[in-house]
Length: 537
Image 1 (cartoon, rainbow, N blue to C red):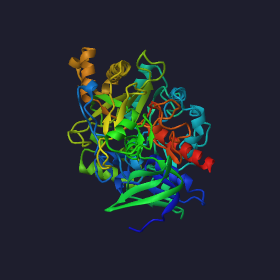
Image 2 (cartoon, rainbow, N blue to C red):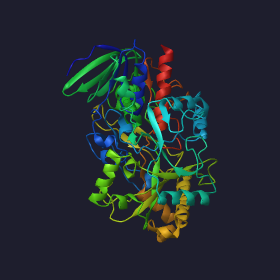
Image 3 (cartoon, rainbow, N blue to C red):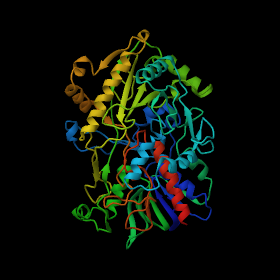
Image 4 (cartoon, rainbow, N blue to C red):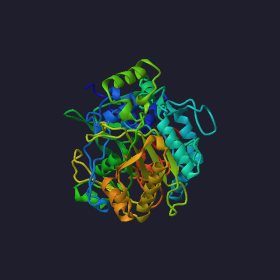
C-alpha cells in the first residue's frame, strides 16, 4: 500500500450513494484535500452496469455484505432475516433496484415537524434537481444538468400496460403521473436511475469525473474502525487496510456516510452514543448521546403472486438460452432496450390504502417476473407479483453494538408491525392488490398462487401471511436522526450534537421514512450535506 499524506482537510467515511457525492462536491474546490475511504472494493462488476444485473450482484458477497441480520422480531412471529447492503465504491447505488422516487410532500413536512428545520419539500427540491439529468429536461420540478441519469422504464409491454390501466381505473387516479412531483397518486411506469439503459451509480457518475482531480484520494478496501478525538473535536480516523492499522487526520471535518446500519455502530465504537451501552463494552465515553442507534426503521414489504399466459413476463422472454442471447445482443449491440433494462420493479401505483392515514400511504409495485427457489433465479412458468410497502411506518427499532470489536456485528431490531396502523395499512393494501389483479383483462388468464382464497378468508389469516412472508425492502434509515430534542443526533445542518468537526450525511439522518424507495432521498441529503460544509468554509 502507498502511504497516504498524514493530513487532509476532509475525510469522508463510506464511498456509497451519499459519500461519493459529498467527496466529489468537496473536491470541486481545488483548495480542499479530500480523502474518501471505502471498506469494499472498486466497482468493477459488469452486473453493476446492466440494470437487471442487480439480481446477480446482490448475491455476490464480494460486492454486497450479508454479514448482518436482525434479532428475532416478536411482531412477525420471531422471524429473523438478513440485511444486505452495497459494500463497494458506489455502495448501494451500484447494486440497488434502481426505482427512483423522491417521496411525497407530506413526508418532508413530517421531517420538519420532527425538528428538521429547513428540510421541507420546497427547500429540498433544488438539491433533487441538482444531482439529476432527468428525461423531462429542465423544468420547475426536474433538473437536466446533473450527473445522475433519470429515465422512464425502457421496457414497456402490454402486460405492464394492462396493470397500469386496470389500477388507474380501479383507484380512480391518473395513469400518466409524474411520481416525482411530490403528489404522486396514480399508476404508471417507474423512473429509473439509468442513462441510455446503463445504471447511474455514484461510482460511475460523480466519482468518475471527480477522480480526475488531484485533490481527491479514494482509498478502497479500507475499513474505518474508529473516529479519533481531541476532547470533543473529531480530528481524524483510524482504519485497517490488510494487516495494517493506520491513522489519518482531518484539519476541518470528518463526514460519516456509512449508512444507517454502520454509521451508528462507528459512532458507538468511537465513544459517541448512549453512555450505559458504551460503558457496558468498555468504551471511553467521549459524548453521551442517547439517540445514536435509536429510531431504526425500514419498509416491510409483502405481496401477492400470480400466474398468467402472457408472453411479456421475464420468465417468458428469458426462458431459453436463445432468448437470453437475443436479448443480450439487443442490449449490448442494439438500442440498449428490452428486458435487461428493468430494475426491481417495472410499474406501480401510489395510493391511500387506509382511512387511518391522511395522505398517500402505500407504494404498490408490478414486478413482471416470478423468482424460483434460489435467490432471483426464474420459476419455469409465466408469472408476476404485486409487491407493496407502507410509506411511513410507525414502528421503530434500534442498532446497538454487541462488542468493542469493530469486526463484530451490531444488534439490529426493527420491531416491524409492532404498531397497529402498520398492520392495518398492509392489510388494506393486500386487499386492494387482490381486487386489481382480479380486474386484469381476461385475455391474460391471471390466477393467484399466493396467498390464496383460504388465507384471504379472514384478516387474521392474511395478517399471519404478511408476518410470515414479509421482508426488508433494504431501506434502512433513521439511526442518527435530525432534530433538536434530546434523542436527536444531528442538527439540521447534519452536525453531530455536542461534537465539533463531525457530521453524518446518509440515510441515518432521516427523522422518518419516505414514501419511496429511499435512494433519491439519500442523493438529495448528500447534495445538501456537501452544500452545508462548503458554505461553512
